Image (cartoon, protein in one colour):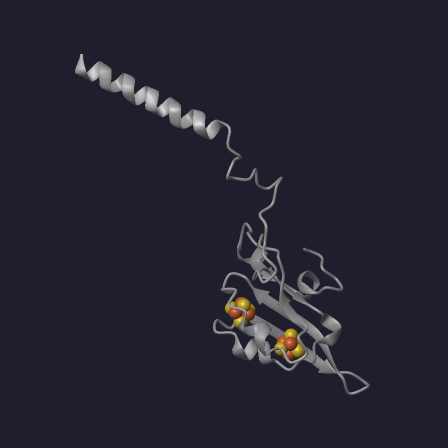
Length: 138
Ligand code: SF4
Ligand code: SF4
């Protein structure tokens, strides 16, 4: 008999908790239909203003995990032209060091956080993906 009373009390308490939460706003989001808010200084996927990059290699030199690969050449007007800019998101830990050292401030981290892929190659992002001007993936 005591056991039946305990179960009954437990059920009532459980229903009370359910009742109070029924009228509250949900704390979860139906992702991906509704995306999470990302604050202004969020460290998401990199974005590059390709035309302003001076191919100085400061970002690839400072990267602690060496996941940045850059290649460029000197153009006819003696300015460096960016040919290759890859970031390997298999390794990147979103530390922001590469952004901090960029002299012309042409590299930044945007609000995008969806970098998941089915294999390692999917996590290799290239100039076409990262460039503001081209932006194929973003
Ligand atoms: S955020 Fe950090 S780990 Fe990622 S590329 Fe930049 S320096 Fe390397
Ligand atoms: S630090 Fe900036 S300017 Fe230098 S290579 Fe990297 S992105 Fe280009």
